[in-house]
Image (cartoon, rainbow, N blue to C red; front, side, top):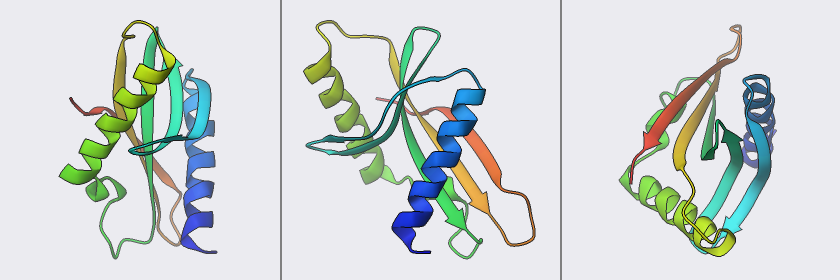
Length: 119
């Protein structure tokens, strides 16, 4: 399985996890001029932009460690661009990270980091 397939499988696991937690999924793989929004959801009148990071194994560290300063900037720009093009007024919103790690022989671990990226 290639990295793109693994990433898509991770995003599917994230969608299922979030839906079970009560998040209303509004869209997936949304393109902006600054990058892709993996999952867009809504919970408690808050628009949530989700970045999904998936790792198979532990040789590259935990999935959330892949969110560097540059990635955070792109996530903020993507969220702001999406809001500007789709809303007349500024909704309540935040950026969360879903980290999925599968290490051979262990159950898949899913962690939800709320307000992971702050403007």
